[in-house]
Length: 133
Image (cartoon, rainbow, N blue to C red):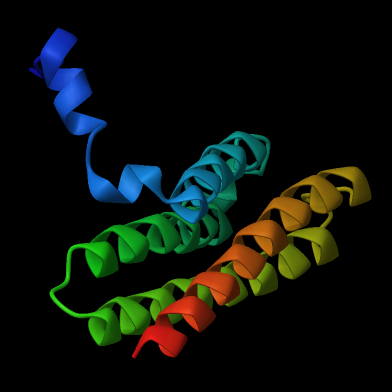
């Protein structure tokens, strides 16, 4: 049985350094969108494409978090590179979902627009970290 998080506990959770990263915020919103969009996929894809898309999207968020907590900028950069790889994996999954007619053009545009936005922000952050090395 789970416990409820309340009041000051919520504030403490939201005061982590990575919460301030816009790329993390956008990546988190992408996860929610992926979960919503994959709800309509056939149940036969629960352990296939649905799972893969969700894991790839979550991997982006988790790699940003883990990288942010590392001791060096070089390590942060390595985790951002992994997050970028997960975004590319998600792109391939989206293409397959369209091929299988699980997503229509409008849905693809919406999701891929968000994915591209996160990717662009990630590249910008990576460049800024590289300049600081």
